[in-house]
Amino acid sequence: KPVTLREIGPLLAHAADPTFKDLASRLWQLSGQNQAFFSKLQTTLRQTLADDRGQLTRALQEAEWEKAEKAAHRLKGSWQMLGYDAGERLCQQLIEQCRKRQQPAANLNLLISLTDSLLTELESYGAYPL
Image 1 (spheres, one colour):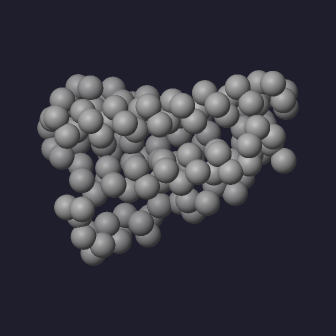
Image 2: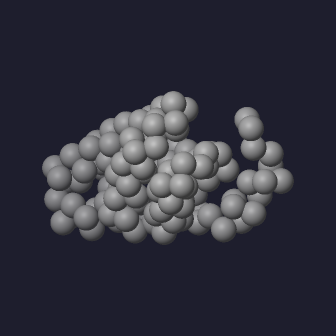
Image 3: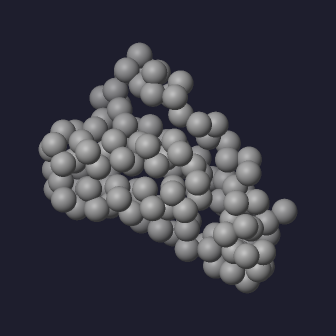
């Protein structure tokens, strides 16, 4: 990767715990403790995060700044909905870098890693909150 561990180390130190141990309870609260809505929310969130992550990386590879900014904004919305500040902050930094037409290599790599961890957690417990 174009980013060294030394460059990304300080960013990792500021990231929240990527294990998302409380994700199920956050989704359960967001779903109004409704099992059917919980399952739909989990599925929709998983698909949306994966789609937006892909669109963001493709747009940045092609230096399509407006598309990248929009994808980062959508990702930020998912992080805000879940209440995870680390993902929200990284998305905001990416949005600002896109506006300046700067390649956000370190922030992008960290956001992808954090998003992948979240996706793994979403898949790890199936359709049931507990």
